[in-house]
Length: 232
Image (cartoon, rainbow, N blue to C red; front, side):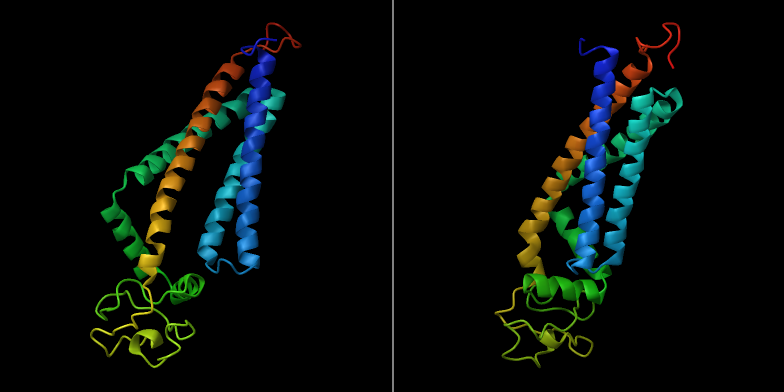
């Protein structure tokens, strides 16, 4: 049968939703593994990833049931939800790709300032860095950090005000020169993350608009095995 036929539309929509199922399971599995293996300690981050996976799972479930049964109501709601998701994801993907280096730095700085000490400690241990930016950390801002005495660069002088993280009574504590700031170690990774996130988001947003188009066409096609005068 030609690709524009009923069976082709049904199979294509089914395969698309199977792909969404796989992506949803991967999101949930990766988040759960990261939490169990203590690779990610932020419950908020883990919860957010799992929530995205669960939402995508239910969207795929609606689309899969609707495509298999040719259910007009389910296909209608699936089409609306998928279109709204396309608008949101396309906007976020474009924003990730369009953001300039200065804006990326501002976002990273705000993220560090709002992060908990547990998250900061996690970053320091995983990337072997101390503090956020430069060797001088003003106590007036919130760029302080938990102690990083266990790092090799701090073991020679663990009482250093920077290594101990005691910034309250020090106007401009100086870190050992061997201790690289976390910002400098993560800058390239953060920049790459924006590009990868934007590219992947843009790719999936196009699959979603394709899904909307296939759903619209599929809803208006008649099942050759059913009553010729009916859609269901």
